[in-house]
Length: 292
View 1 (cartoon, helix red, strand yellow):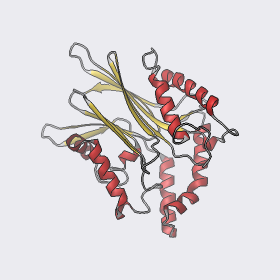
View 2: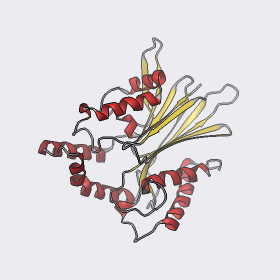
View 3: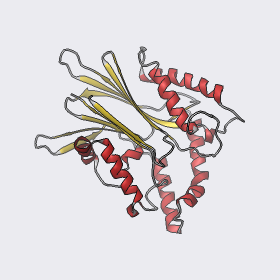
View 4: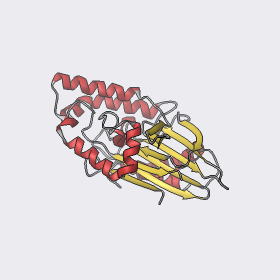
């Protein structure tokens, strides 16, 4: 097998991440989704662990069903989302959900088109939200190198981290108390995400085309393609246990499961601390593919 994958729930129970690999005729599709934490105790879908968990699994299944079709990645996303939205409307119970309660998710979709007759393949990226995709390898001397294929600065996340730091400075060290204080800001942010004219995340009712980041590049042989949710990337940001190159090298040398174990051990320790992130632990998922 040319790839490995891992997905670990941050709280040990509900996992709102998803990783999937689909191999087809001349192509491989690598998908990483990170469903956003629900901001209300009420649920609208009875199946699954939570509405976001249902959303990522339903959409991933609907996308998998259309991957063989012709069309751009944007067109296939819209086709899959149409089926997901129909399933939501058929299964949702109770009063209409307010926009801040609609599930949203990141979507990092890498389509690898395999070269034929010895030719190099290509990578086609379609990215929404703040998951991370790295291309890792080494230089001629063996020094680890890494390239961020989808650099993305998330100003909304910076605002959340600043708010967390302010609460810590105020003396609010309990994670539950911090979450309650942050909730109104997070609900407003989710409302904006779900009603934006050009959404930057995957949402149920997009008002217009997605503001997806798309890239096409050659697939260098021997490199490691590493796609991950931001929970896995905490090893780099904000915990600074690795840089991008070091993370790629560690995944090659030790495997994804060992890196998740290291992440959880750090988050369980004192250094995980009260002021680094809004949640003490997050769902962590990654897929590593060797471009041989």
